[in-house]
Image (cartoon, rainbow, N blue to C red):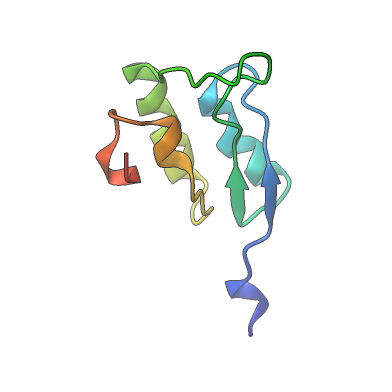
Length: 84
C-alpha cells in the first residue's frame, strides 16, 4: 500500500463555524477529517445555514483531496453532493 492512499486525520474543531474545519485539517496535513456534528452539552444536531454550507463546500474544495466521510450529516438537506 502506498502512503499516498492512506487516510490519516482527526476530529477538527468547528469553533468559529463549520467552514473553519477544512483549513484546520489542511494545517495538520491531514488526508481525512471528521467533525463532531452534535453539540456536546445537549447531543442535539444543529442546522447548517445555506451560506455556512456554501462556504464549507468552498473551503473543503480548496484543500484538494481531504476526505470527509461524515460531511453530509453536517450539511443535511443543504448539500446533496455530500450525501445529505
